Amino acid sequence: MDASDRLTALLTQRRLTAVRDQLDSLLDEASRAQLNLREALLLLAEREVARRDSRRIQMGLKLARFPCVRPLANFDFEAQPSIDPAQVRDLATARWVGHAQALLLLGPPGVGKTHLAMALGREVVERGYTVLFTSAAALMAGLTKAHSDAHLEDKLMQLAKPKRLIIDELGYLPLEPAAAHLFFQLVSRRYERASVLITSNRPVGEWGQVFGDAVAATAILDRLLHHSQVITIRGDSYRLREKRRSGRLQKDAAPTPISSTQ
Image 1: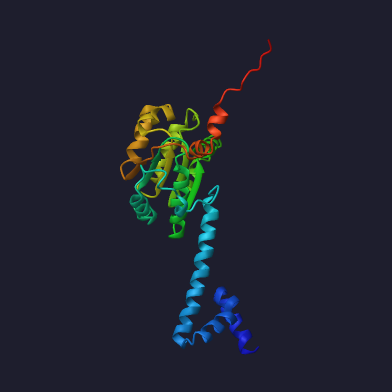
Image 2: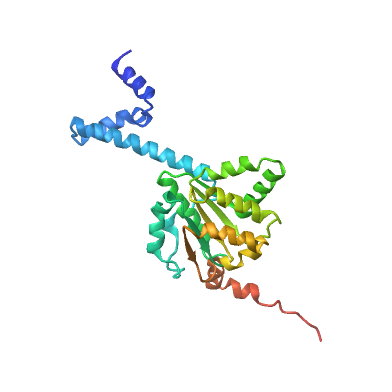
């Protein structure tokens, strides 16, 4: 086995796959830049770390189960002046995730809550934390089924693992009668251990109606709000705004003329 084959085998054994796969091009790059040995080694190490970070992020995004990609850079802060961009940028550092804090994004439909939740979730993944995204309806259906199948403890353990759990659209659909107690168990399991991000079209004062149980809703909010930030987004729906700009909203809303004969 010559030196090239031995090097390839060693790189494979140590799982330095980025260096192995790009070795010739990296050595050419180092030669063109007239790098010394230390600088060349630094170049190889940086490319290996970059490959591993990229793969880690891609795997984290896959495990997070985001319905689509929503980068924070694409969020239109000018369209939602009620949001403080500095506060959002601070949240993007993911410090609050490390402190197991909750984040509530409240506001009417279409103002960007889900976009912001997914964008902040992506930032968390890039910083090395695990994330799971789920709709409130899917979450409660899963908890209800696990409870009926006598597997609730297993389900709660599974949902307690991600460092951030994103629960989207709480309050949009009616919940089952037992939902409040199941949701309380989930919040209690994650309380002061891992962070929760919830988007909702209902202010917290109406969560008693959302869960159909004012006492349970109070207990849920007591834990969520203890270590939390709440962002209330005001304004029009993005989709309705675009329809108004294009004139489609007036056209759609206009009554259809009724022809008559005399």
